[in-house]
Structures are given as C-alpha cells and as structure tokens.
Length: 130
Image (cartoon, rainbow, N blue to C red; front, side, top):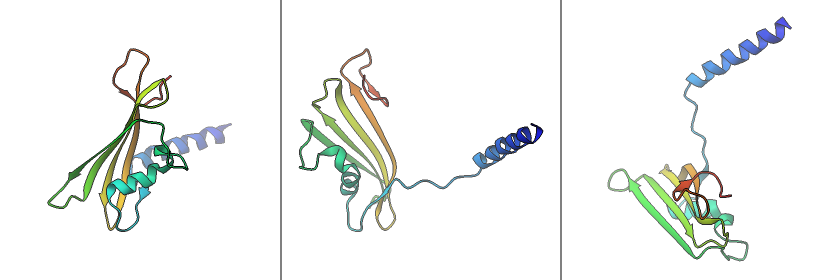
C-alpha cells in the first residue's frame, strides 16, 4: 500500500513539474506549398463543408480572412460561417482559425461554435445545439 501511495505522489509531483515546462505547440494541419490560407482551411474542413458529391446542407457560406503582421502578413485569422442550415436546431455554424506561414501555411488554432435556434441564448456557444 505504501509503495502505491509513494508511486502516486511521484506521478502527481512529476506532472506538476511537467506543467511548468513550456510544451511545444501541437500542429493542427499543414498546407501544401503554394496554397493560400483559405485553401488550407478548405482542405482541412473538406468533409464538413460538402459531401463527396460537393453538395452542402447550408444556404450561405461566408469566409473572412484578416492578415496580421507587416506588409506581407505571415499570420492570419480566418473565419468560415455557414448559415441557413437544414438542421432545425442550428441557426449557424462557425469555424475560426489562426494560421502562420513558415514555408507553407499552417493551422495553429481551430475552434468550432454554434448558434442555436432554440433556447434563451442568442449568441455563439462551444456546445452543439440541443
């Protein structure tokens, strides 16, 4: 029993020290050479935007890209929003990304939000609509 408690204490203490070290960022997706940020995001979202026939379940697709950095931006934020979904619970669905350029565009962060038709909340939520 003592050895189990000791092992548990070592594990907990070790995990506390590991949290202090800066962990390298996890790469979400890396684009191909020559691809623009919007193409990289579209490749990443491929089966969420349309089915295998290229058909979609939304009326409107909006893409907004904003550059950050100098004259030629090497960091961008990009938002993909789908409205008029066939799902009666969901008013809109949104994906937001940050990308950086290092020879190719890479997706650094990705988030998915929903805007529900039902319920008291009119804003965006990180949980799927009921």
